[in-house]
Structures are given as structure tokens and as C-alpha cells.
Length: 348
Image (spheres, rainbow, N blue to C red):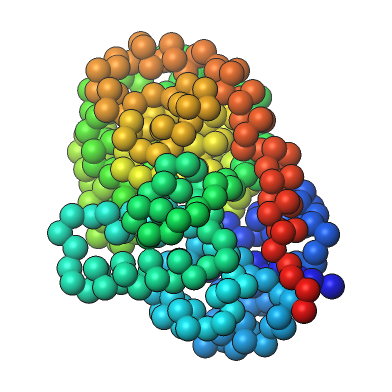
């Protein structure tokens, strides 16, 4: 029987729910395997600790087996893939970080060479997917790939708890960013909230992965300088259950990323009908707005006073929740992923 191999990096917060999605929701007619980068065994998965081990696995596949890379950040893998025949039977899902690295101003010669290598590899894949139309268009421009399809990841396993609306008696909980990655631009987001420092708020910042210790320290110091004891910085990893509980507790989310990032958080806010602030220049903002979602521009946040924000959080946006069920839930996206996976396998 034909088989699809899903290849993931060291991202258990991503590959564990995606494995569940592919096995329980998609249920394609082909068989599936899940390869994950890990130094320890992972239940139901094939683990590889190094790129050498990954390519030993890839080279052992027969000609009927297809490969889907979920995010492909490692340039050392690109170099090995470029002249490996497996690439003709491989597809990839591009993540935002892969694309936007090539759009930065003042790139070095080495970075430009990496850009060319990336483009050459992407052009050789069987199929290439982006997570929203804006990123697909960018991939065509930046990576010189003529055909890039759009296939979002779903919001997986989010349990929406019944919550009471915030009031003057309890702090208005504002989630800032989704990780410790500098691309979150925490300082900019915090500065846009500075005018609320005297009000009954709590600034919640997940800073538990994706960033360097110095950056995390700088962000926490800046937040404390602005908001004193109203800052809750999360620096230890949370389980999915704990993370989902956190998202249920916050009242509004503020992103200052200049690119598509943190879709899990964004989708969770929309499903719960909570306000979501995004930079208007991002592909996420454009895509969600075109689909009819009510999202707000981070650029305008400094002009929003506390009473306006409190009123906004007290008004659940049911239309956003309805649109989420149509576009980004497991039930909405499982048929699309199933159809894609079933077009991949070839007969030996």
C-alpha cells in the first residue's frame, strides 16, 4: 500500500496534535508515518536525532512512498535535498519564518546565498503549500516558485471554557505575543499599551520558547518598568492543557509581529470571540479580514482607552466564532488535507 511520510522538526507542541489530526480526523486511504526530530523515542513516531539519521531513513524509502515536510528551516537539509532524488516525491508546507528571513533589509552575502539555495530547493519539490494566501504570494515572489497552494493548519483540540466577562473588579488580562522569539516585537507592543499602566490590567507574556535569554530578560525588564507588578511572564514550558487554559483566561491578545506568526493563538481568540490585534501590514490581518473576521489593528492600539477596551472584551464576537468553524477548525480542514494527501502516493 502507498504511504505518506510526515517529517517534523523538534516541535512536539506541533507534531503531537498534528499526528492526532491526521490519524483521527483526516483518515486518508493511504497509510501514514510520522518522523520527528528527537533524541528520545516518541510513541507512534519514528525518531531521528540528526540529519544523517534523517537521510538514512529517506534513502531507505521505496519509490511508492511520498514525503511531506512540515516546516523546513534547516539549510543543511536543503543542501542534502537539492540533489537527492527523493525531493521529486516530496512536498513541503512553508512556515512564516522560512519566508520572511529573505525579506529583511541589509542581508549579508551569506544570507543572500542561503536565499538562492532555498529557492532552488523549493522549486524542485513536487508540491509546495503556504498557510495563507499572502504567504503563498510571497513564496512565489521570494522563492521563485510558480505554483504555491494554500492549505492552513487547523486549530486542534482547543476546548473553549465558559467564561465570565471581565469587569472593573478583575484585571483585564492582555496576552502579548506568542513566544520569546524577537519577531514578536514585544517592546513595540508593550509601548502601545503603556497608556493603560495605571488601570486594572495584567500583561501576560509567554516567553518560554524560541528566544535567547538576553532578549527574554530585556523584555521582562521593559515590561516591569512600564507596568510594575502587573506583569506575568511565563518562562517555563506549558503542557497543551495548561496553554489552552491560559488562552481561555486572557481577555484580549496583542501581536506586533510583522509577519504571519502565532496562528494557534490567533485562531483560539477568534473561536472564543475575543478581540485580536494584529499589525495591518501582515498577511494574517489581510487574509482574516477578507474572510470576514473582525480583527483590530495594533497600530491603533495606543488610541484605545481602557473603557473602550473593556467594552470590547465584554462583547463576544459570535461572527468570528462562526467563521472559525467554517474555515480553520479540524472539521473544516480535514477534508482538504485528506484530499491533498490522497493525491500524493504513486504506484511503485
